Image (cartoon, rainbow, N blue to C red; front, side, top):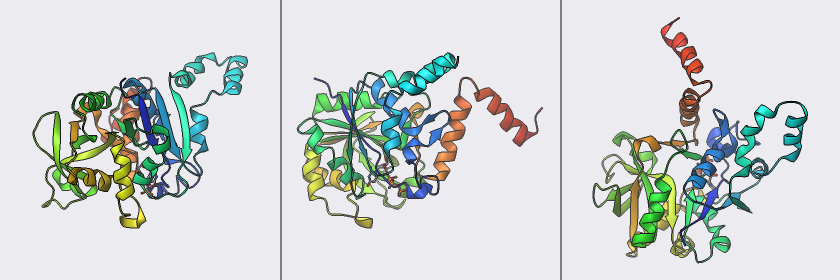
Length: 295
Ligand code: UTP
C-alpha cells in the first residue's frame, strides 16, 4: 500500500512573526484568501495523502476548528441568502481524516516529529511543514515523486530540495547531491553553512518522507541551539550511519514560500494576491498605478 499518512507540525511559537502570532498560529495567517496550513493540507490531498496528523500546541485550536465542519455557519449562509459563499467552505469536504496531538513543550521540529511516533508506528510517512507552501496554485506534486522514490529505492529518508542563490545558503540545511538528476542520492548534509563551506545551493524545502528509522535517530540526537532537537541533525545521523538518503528537486513552479519571517510572508502575500483569479488583475493594476503612475 502506498504511503498515505502525513505528519504536519504546527506547534512552533512563531516568534519571528510577533506580534501577529501572539495569540494565533502563524500557520493560520492568511496568504491572500486562505490560511497557510490550508494550502499545505490541499497539496497533501492532491498527492494521495488520506490521513493527516497535525502536531499542535497551545493557542492552536483554531487550526482544528478550521478543518472541522461548521454546520452553524453553513446554515447561516443558507438562511441569509448567501449561498454563493458556500463553495468557500468546500475544502471541509476533502477526503481526509484528521488526527491531532499536542507537543507540550516547543523543543524543536525534531521533537515535534517524535510526537507522531505512537501514531505512525512502523509505517513510513510524509512530513510537511505547516508554515511552508509549495507553489502558487496547489499543483505541487513533488511529494508524489518522493513517495515513488521511497517505494522503489527504500531509503531511510527522501528530502525535497530547491535551488537558492548561493549567497542565501547560510539560512538553510544544504545537501550535497551525488548527481544532477531530478531524483538523486544525498552524500552530505550541512546545516546553515557559510557560502565557502556550502556543498551546493540545493537546500531542504519543507517536505520529507521518512522510514520509521528516523525515530531512533531522533532519540539519539542531542539538543542543538536553544535546546531544540533539530530534524536535520537526526537525518545527518542516519546518513553518517550508512543509511541511504535521497533528494528530489522541486520544480521552479513549486517554489517554496516559507511563512516564517515577515519578509517572506509579505512576498508570499503579494504573489498569491496577484495570482488570485478574481482579484489578481485589479490588484496588479493598483500596484502599477502606485509604482509606475500608470492610469
Ligand atoms: P520554525 O523553525 O519556523 O520554528 O518551524 P517556530 O518556532 O515556529 O518559529 P520561530 O523561529 O519562533 O519564529 C518550522 C515548522 O515546525 C513547527 C512550526 O510550527 C513550523 O510549522 N515546529 C517548530 C513545531 O511544530 N514545534 C517546534 O518545537 C518547532
